[in-house]
Length: 194
Image (cartoon, rainbow, N blue to C red):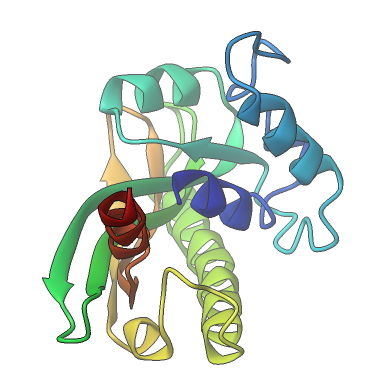
């Protein structure tokens, strides 16, 4: 599921900024998924949907985020995935809700003034709105197994201001709800059969 989220959001930024800083080794001898994901990224039909986003950052660790952003210039998409809440749906399956934070921000130099920050905030809000609109369209077409249509209607957009990262932008907070997104019940039934 985390790889599906990674590749889904990889279609928004400029292609050159997607694997830069994320797939730094270029290959993995112990994880065959590495080559599979890189292949999916290079063969994506929908890509650069918001090409003014120059970089892509994906993960949970603030330290990794900071290391990555320290090396960036310009705008970036940062996707942070959180806990998965699993509730029985009464039909021997789960309704799963995962918290996902989708941030579009711009790294600015220390010398930037208030007007430059306002412009950066305006630009990043426009970029984030394009991403949100595409998520809404994809959920409406039922193309996102990890998010139903109702989830997109209940979201929050909050400012992203980080003096430490020298970055300004906006974060779309989603509670993505889908049916047994981890496939837990199917796996359990398979185990019961032996």
